[in-house]
Amino acid sequence: MLSATPKLVNAASTSSAPVAAVKNKASFTKEGYIMRILNDKDASKIYVGKSNYKKLVKNITPSKKAKTISPIKIQKVKFRIEKVLNVKGRGAGAPVYLVASKDKKYSSWTTQSGLQYYYLNSKAMKNVKKPLMRIANRLNTSLKKANNKRDFNAAMKAAKKLHGNQRKFVLRSLKQLKKDGSMNVGGTNLLIFGLQ
Image 1 (cartoon, one colour):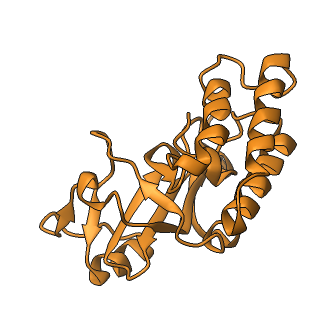
Image 2 (cartoon, helix red, strand yellow):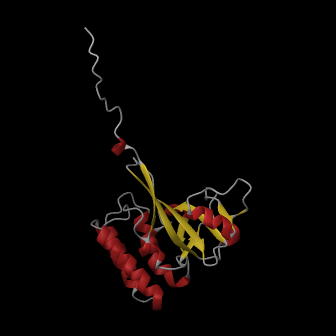
Image 3 (cartoon, one colour):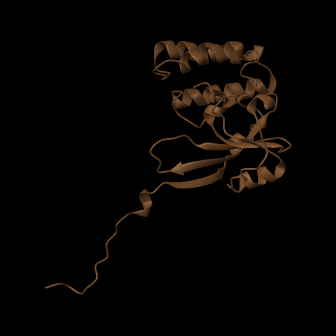
């Protein structure tokens, strides 16, 4: 005999589905225009014009005919992180950042591997970058390892010789790295964007 009483079946739980959320990231935005979009063959599209920026802010992809520019042409342009798109419940993948130039002429959604601290390759940063690159290129980036700890201390020593806002930013970033304990903590430290 078949039952005529309907049974409620929960086929899929909505709590396990990935949810995308665009957020302001005040801690990144307040750092100002200190990022560069790397000149990379895999770089995200960089849109030209304030109207395209406004669409990107609303998480709307500009039309296929929207004007774009090659990353090689904007290597001297400084960018700021405006927003973060983070997918909760994702299995893998990095957060995506909306970056824009000061005049909002150039903007793009990109991951941290497509960004770099603007002054990372400057002469003043050479002695900070070199030991950080050694750590980034190792299989294990934990600061508990003796060689990583030694390189971290060398970077910290060099950072103390920097001046002004750059010194403050780099020291703050290195302290965050020490707190994280490893370079594998993604999306928290602007200084190590593009190092990995």
